Length: 390
Ligand SMILES: Cc1cc2nc3c(=O)[nH]c(=O)nc-3n(C[C@H](O)[C@H](O)[C@H](O)COP(=O)(O)OP(=O)(O)OC[C@H]3O[C@@H](n4cnc5c(N)ncnc54)[C@H](O)[C@@H]3O)c2cc1C
Image (cartoon, rainbow, N blue to C red; front, side):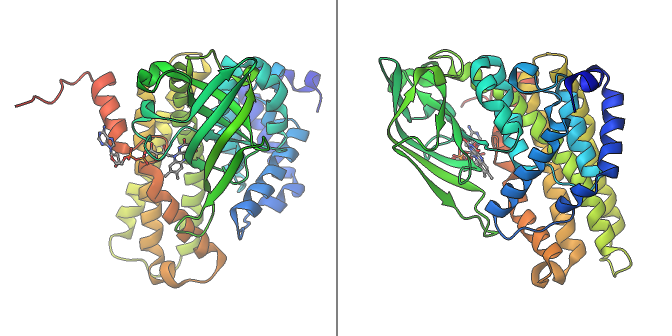
């Protein structure tokens, strides 16, 4: 697909959607990724990366990204439509696209040279990135992080640890929030920097989840030398970059989750159709659909605002709260409708529901816990008064 042929699709979102839909409907080659079950995270992410390569080859996942970073133009709506249409066609949203939505926009905005150098290979599924923010003593209190980067001439020397890095076991690069100021400098002394996994001194320890899948990892940095031109933004600007990033982490991840949840909801209904359902099943099904659609309705507004270049800021926490509600609702529904089979079933479909149920428990934690999101909304969106002290 050439840039000349595709250019109109970058400015006409309706035409992009219908062309993509036709492409997905006719692409037998895509059957390789339909209804598949994977035994390990490594298998799944590798196959999903192959789907990205396929989509890149035909141009589709290049929309929504600037030409300077390997894209074909367009905005967040194009990426949203891609996730919608993949899900509607029974295809997965490729795992590496999840972190791409969190890390791609800040790198494009604050480090266009790094985006030009590395984003095309990400879009081609050749490698992907992990987000190195959380540490053992710094999750909700992110400004307390300790992983240090010391400037020495034209490079930094990194020492410390990151924890809960999604896709950390397979990522080729880590976008890390590190301390370049004094220990007491809190959010003022932070910087964001991109580190290659194969740099001497980087070691990765995968974390096995309750499902058995190794989705996350601990990442250790032992005097790792990183060129200064790997900074995302200026030194000391890390907090501002992180706040910019969180808008996409909370909003685009919510959109992707809604798209996938709608597909999984349909699949669940297909799976239980004709069987005995527990009392109250119809009500539960209706409530769950309502939870997913509420997320989706909110998400449409947010993605439009991001696409228009508006600052969503702390309001993205609404999307995050609705996302967690929908994720819990869907997977609890699956558990209850599948009944004893959910616990004892040995078929691959049930195995996927069980693994997804375990993962859905983290929806109120990842990307910032539900309690913290509600505090952000109370303080920064609703402007509620502080709790009175006695
Ligand atoms: C599946 C998954 C994927 C993740 N992926 C990544 C990733 O890719 N990169 C990354 O950097 N991190 C990642 N994380 C980490 C995630 O961001 C943190 O787990 C989260 O921010 C919470 O931090 P914590 O685990 O240190 O818990 P803590 O901050 O220790 O919180 C523990 C409990 O205390 C509550 N709490 C803490 N502070 C307050 C407060 N001020 N007010 C009210 N309640 C409070 C929290 O709500 C929570 O219930 C991931 C986590 C999970 C579960």
